[in-house]
Length: 342
Image (cartoon, rainbow, N blue to C red; front, side, top):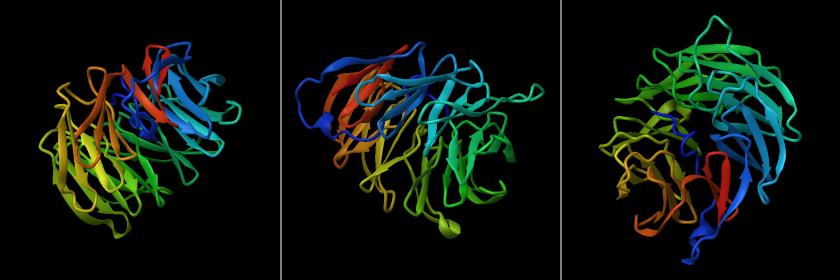
């Protein structure tokens, strides 16, 4: 369950404008950071948020790429995972376990957290926000809840093994995929484990869609659970280790594997819809579904556009490390440079 966001980062939002024409795509420099891009990228309003290798967060204009503001984090440690945004607040995580909370509007720092000197542990993925708290899963096995207003620790949950992926907040619960194969549902106010499930391998970050939660695991399994009353709905298995969290749109669930396979399942019952071999080794970041298309960034730097219903390849092009799509553009990075394609 390696977090590869620092290598290839996340894809999201809309592919419709990218896929609408077979004409050659246009690539142009979009922004240049001061250091190498290491985080995922979040979109909020007309802002993009992303972090670098020396602990800085950047807010960019999503239309022009102009820098709106930059802020140095709690430490100079690499920014990892996806910045978490809620209202006028954005929280970003550092690999050394630190957290930084700033205002979306101007980048001013609200609070920071650093690990006590007598504690070890880091963050492989980003934090989550919900219920007035910030939740961060540490590789020493602790999940900590911080007060969103002041950064004070409200409670701590301890797993039997280190935690590798970000938690998710939904309906008063913190949903957590654990390295020991447990899927845990924690009370967001107390941190008490109130229910859950499991798999035969390490579990990736869960995804909530409507009333249900979906999680995938390194044993090749995908699970659907109704959150209320914790009712298992279906299980499926793609017979290869799954390295990405599920992505869901229009009744289709897509996961990718350590062997380079992209697999689509029916959201209603987990039935196999199609599978596509990228022939590139592990798919390093979760695919995106939008506009009836699936966009996949491969391990060898290609971008594949696949029909979400049939699994047929529409187009393929070299794109470096694909990050995210937004408003008909999509972005990829090379060291400290961010490029856009449209």
